[in-house]
Length: 223
Image 1 (spheres, rainbow, N blue to C red):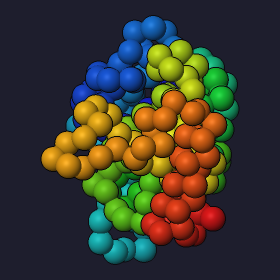
Image 2: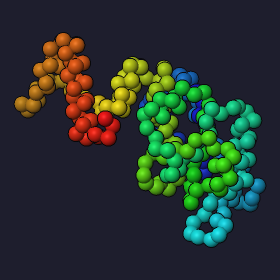
Image 3: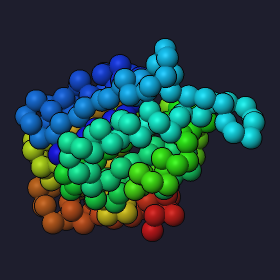
Image 4: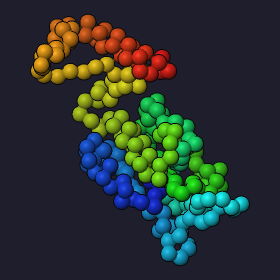
């Protein structure tokens, strides 16, 4: 899989992609992640990529020409399965969406800033708009890091135990059950006996029941 990211702050993404699962996936060739500095594609002086909005109002808007130059330059090299704009008014990102995106070959992410991007880019180039929550960030880079991390870990070969990703919270619209490790007793706090029984079927039934109860108590909207 290849992920290209259009950004004005590529250095902000260096750390998230240089550690943990994403780092290992890149080293193994499971995924390629490339950032592209938008200012390199502007014809305007001093790397300008934003301007005042028509009609007035507070804030600045990312200009159409630099974005289109960058997108079309990348599209000359490959066809993208999705061109994604990260925006507060996009579709809320969730696990089923992450699952679907992880099966694609090439995706392009656009990180917005200021009051957003010229809407002509959204009309003519963007195929999907994603929000990671009902709040506003300073820019789309952190949202891009969240989206990338969530889908890269689902790609076969990214993690040692591929079944682990399939048993995460939300994969079956349930929250994950409680988990424990050694010691079996600490300060009088004991691990549930069923987990020490060795009876795998009973353990799986218990875990499923715990998932149901936890989801009912914490996220009944998922049921």
